[in-house]
Amino acid sequence: SAVISQKPSRDICQRGTSLTIQCQVDSQVTMMFWYRQQPGQSLTLIATANQGSEATYESGFVIDKFPISRPNLTFSTLTVSNMSPEDSSIYLCSVEQGDTGELFFGEGSRLTVL
Amino acid sequence: EDQVTQSPEALRLQEGESSSLNCSYTVSGLRGLFWYRQDPGKGPEFLFTLYSAGEEKEKERLKATLTKKESFLHITAPKPEDSATYLCAVTGANNLFFGTGTRLTVIP
Image 1: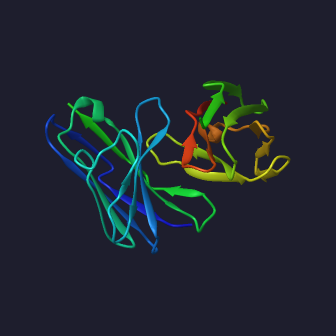
Image 2: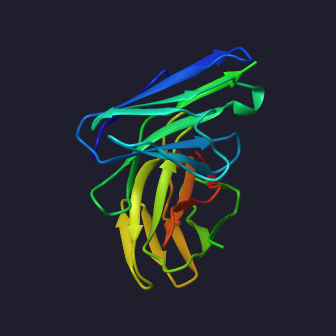
């Protein structure tokens, strides 16, 4: 299974600022997924990041708020822009094992916005 | 509409007290049902994949089963280290949908 590293693991941010989360995978993968897990809630897919093309965003998520980069097959970043307290969540990077649908997740980045 | 419902929301068991967690789903063309374990402050850890009704998978004290409408995660003689949130997810024609999880606490 892939080993996925995320940075930062946690951060406390001020309202109106932006934060970039990094995700590094130890093997080349076609697609990387970014999820959000709000307190007490399930995981919600933000977007799918493919190398060499723009990310595909799910309903309710827009590129201006959550810009994503995917410069190569092992790395991606998610930026949470102009943060508000409602953005306080755990943000998770994940990759799929082959074509099985099985996802492997990073440790997550816990953001608290004051 | 694709939907996943997990019950109960929380479960407290004495060490050694076996029980089951439920995952009910509605999905167009089920391609797979997945169980994950999530410890506090960590990302979900993959446990099982089930693809068709009647399928069963086992790992240590955990056994997952699947019918056409639901899946059960059976925990036999649990230990305190089994305490975690257990997440169910399904994938059909569209994306992966996660349930909200069952928070399991096993008391020594």
